[in-house]
Length: 460
Image 1: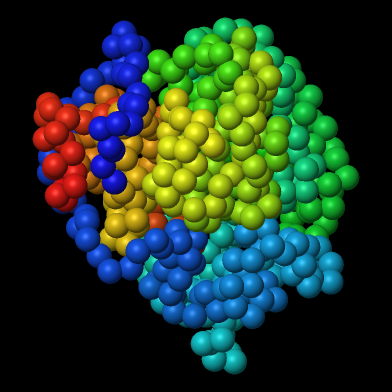
Image 2 (image 1 turned 180 degrees about the horizontal axis):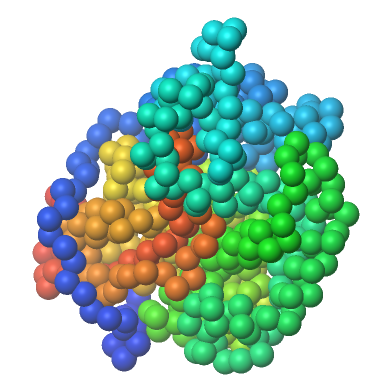
């Protein structure tokens, strides 16, 4: 979508705060930009892609969760049905059914229903995370599995411990930072800053009734305290990675957080990952990163935003020191025309996209293209995150092909430390949320206004 000449554009931030200037790679093949299926749901694409590696896995998941269809599953993610409505009779049954969804042979991809009566799936005793239908498959798979076995051991613990976050038994540290934000350059300094408060919180969680209840119902021995503490720390970084990455973008791109009326961040392409079970205080750490700020408004926009997260937003000034979260379900370029251009929603000071995925799917690239062009042509400071170096290279190439002015990219100091396993391909190297970032601002083309509009309207 090309901007119209009568519309006001953002000014560039001061050059003195621009991060390292880079020369993007030019060897990665870009994704085609025109395909047939518009407006895909990233949640739906992810769910049904399970079938590519393990035929029947999506149906197994629905069966174990006591659901009849993907639509019913999606209704829960959208906030239209209670999480507790899965129909489990007790916690032990819930944890067992959840574990059952991971049960397929990591080598031959056989599901329990495809095994003969003489065979059963058994866990790898080292990582307790992958399954095999017999010694032959496990032996054949070991050269690949050995590369990730130790890391997958962490995954197996973390996915159980996440229950404490969902139930609210693990409350994140909160409160003003005892040191200036510039000192906090990553997790090492963040943990050092929060040391005393975090130590008390972790000790309380480790000895809590919720922790005892968890390990009394999961059907496996309780790990040592240092293992559990390590898991809690990884989960903490996963929960705080997004707000602190927003802060990284605000600082690196030179956004004025002292603006009268408050500053606005749009999180585009938001899905249930950013909005499902998200609580109002989950982004408080972003506010503490900027003491003295005059209000921070964070608006999640995406077609997979949970219904119970969709709240009304306003352009009225924010209370100084507050962080306001809200959501809007829909495509961003539609949201821009209907809400931003009409003045109903504040113009963004920063736009962030967590794992947009446009490098991986032609359908997603087609849906993202109008938004990427909008962000480029309105010169909106933008930050996106990706999971891996490979995704970083592919995403950079696409942005270069779109003539965006890339100001910086690199490893994210606030990347999640919780390893993420590829569900249907368990021996693939785990990745980490927001491991890398890309920042861009405007176009790299030095065309005048009329030439730029002609180029965009005529296609890329």
